[in-house]
Image 1 (cartoon, rainbow, N blue to C red):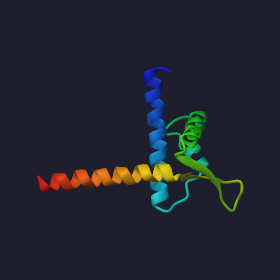
Image 2 (cartoon, rainbow, N blue to C red):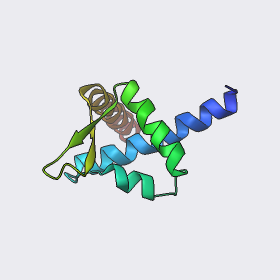
Image 3 (tube, one colour):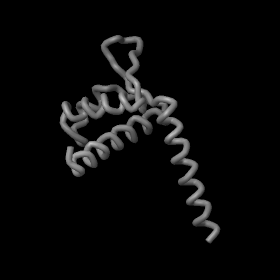
Image 4 (cartoon, one colour):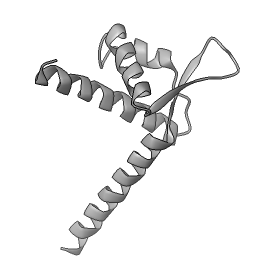
Length: 100
């Protein structure tokens, strides 16, 4: 796989993970269909592959709600830890900036 293609895949996965995290922290369920039909990031096939890659990396899981026809995407403890660390670093950088 070329370097450019790997970066493109990483970028798509990052956008997907960010979208899932935003919905999760807002307390909104995030459906697989929401991702697949939001073609702003990529084609349905590409998005499906990238979601499966995030599952393999243990960053998200598929969950089934009361209606078994709907699949939800949820963050794993691993991805929650990542976002907590990211928030900590952003706050730390912001506090250093205000002290200068």
